[in-house]
Image 1 (cartoon, rainbow, N blue to C red):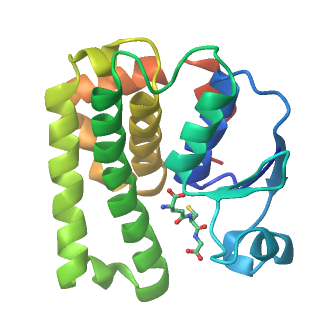
Image 2 (cartoon, rainbow, N blue to C red):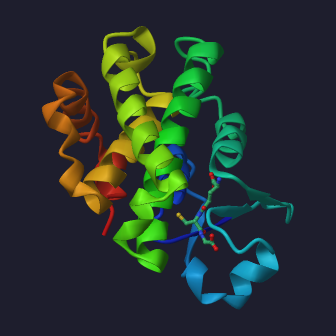
Amino acid sequence: MELYLNTTSPYARVVRICAIEKQLDDVKLIWVDPWADDNALLTANPNGKIPVLVTDRGETLSESLLIASYLDGLSPTLSLLGAPNYTDVFALSGLSQGLTDAAFMTVINRKHFGKESDSTVLGVRRQNAIVRCLQRLEDRVSTDVMQSDINLGQIVTGVALSYIDFRLPELQWGESQPLLADWLTRFSERASVKETAFT
Ligand SMILES: N[C@@H](CCC(=O)N[C@@H](CS)C(=O)NCC(=O)O)C(=O)O
């Protein structure tokens, strides 16, 4: 299998952590810049986004959560979707994917349109979404889905929070969400998380 990725994409990092946790060692990493219209990437995925997974049978999968689900089904080792149950894992994954989307779009809009993009109607909606998602996660820290052995919801959550620390450090969210900050510290000790740190 081939995984197209870069070192700063939160979406690609989720997939990479899943592959490591599932002990799939036959994933060849293809490093690309999705913003440079890389030919190999555009051939694999015409929408030009990473992550993209090309399977051994040549199928091309996009969308990080779909790729993660595919990888989860490849080996019986450690179900990333089923523990403690599918509903809670999907709910947490969706909540934190929304946090990643709001943070990522904030970063991209600032890059292309300047910091004033935060003050547009959509920018304000993104900032509010970030604040609400962080508080919802803080309220959920003690739930089974956050505290059980690793699952996709935790992976998406840990990556979303690390991405905010990496790209939007001024948010200092740990001050208002201390339980979540402690949770991230523990989560960040996993080998798969350390190995995939944003650079
Ligand atoms: N919903 C997609 C988002 C993927 C995405 O936006 N990837 C970014 C990198 S973090 C990208 O490739 N952007 C290039 C572009 O938008 O042209 C997923 O979950 O995989």
